[in-house]
Length: 267
Image 1 (cartoon, helix red, strand yellow):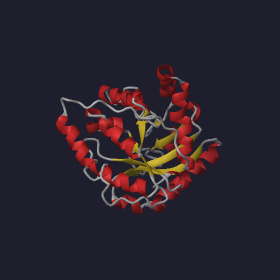
Image 2: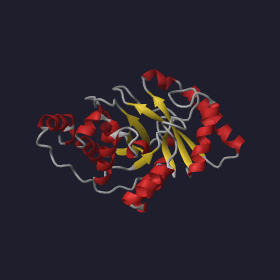
Image 3: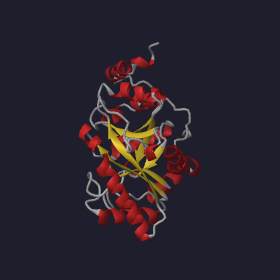
């Protein structure tokens, strides 16, 4: 398994509090069957983009721990980039392994700001491939998953959290996660691991659960093949997404979505 969303840098965000906790997370990931990991610390505001030297220093510390402990894990640098109107993808940590292509991005859980579709579209036109982190936990998408469909139609990819599929974040997030899979909108499943307990880096349980429900070929695509392709800057395996029926009881939200994405229909 290859995990493209983890918080492993010590003393940086809400992940491990020190290098010893990072070591424990690495041990769990390897024991669980993970072979490659992208370290995607939160880059929440413009000032975090100026912490590149600190991020590179801590990334080197993690590599040293892996060598010292004799682990076979391969690690790559990335970031979980919070989208602001002025966000640029021009740092070493902005894209996976600095491949200048795949970037893990997020926005608020309670709303999708008006500027987000335009920024994603601009990045796509520049050759970037934004991967939207945990869309199943975003309230507007939970209420109306057609948002997710529109983002995928634009060219963005979606990454689900393992915990959502297992019910860790509640029934609504779990239901939305499975709906997105069933509509062929999901391209990755990752841990979003912050620790070894409540936000575990473990992926084995969700892999086994998803194989039973959806079959091994799909799960292998979402947890091995597409993660490998994203790290290497290659095209993802995608299926034709299945649109959601327009919800007659929520016409206002649907019209608002169309307004937000109307630039896609303009010449």
